[in-house]
Length: 235
Image (tube, rainbow, N blue to C red; front, side, top):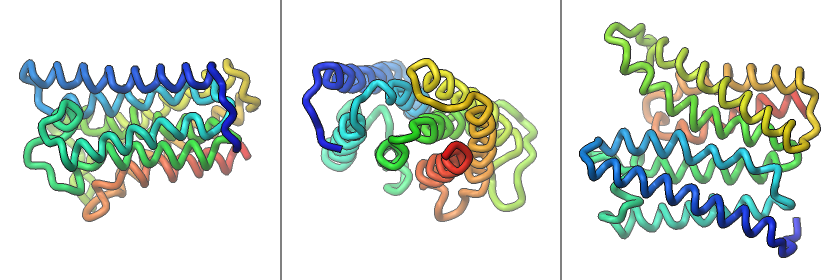
């Protein structure tokens, strides 16, 4: 766990920071051209988590942990004190409650927990991040495309949204599995495939059940439960 200086790790760290900040910057440019902040927030939700694919390239969990720590502090500071900053305006929707507005901070904290807790295995952290980024991000967008939705009796979430989440979660999970194998992570392909399917199903179910007072915290409930399910299969 000791941090040894490495030019390779430093270069990857800087590249990820540049990538995420560029996504936020593009989101702000899109917002200024008239798009609703909800759209740019979803775009950032989809794309920022993709950086998790490079996790196996780091030599120590301390290096990737610096990414959510730094970004989390930056975003929290901007949301609290810099209301007109590009970081804030690209990700906070007008009229947002304080609890919902800080969703991106929860997203970042979740990634930090995943990276540290599942560093040894990699796949749970990577797949769960995609389940949160792609799956959870797609659920609302897919559901909105259906005029007649089959809404679950316990809330306002729908079967169509959950099916969309399942498809995108599985796609992202399989991408993370392919990246793990390509980058030398030792995992039997069939066991990894099973884990991705189960993790996607668990994440989809948990997202559908995260309603009411805990709804704003699906960036915790979805990735952490799906990562645990994946870990239980591959450990």
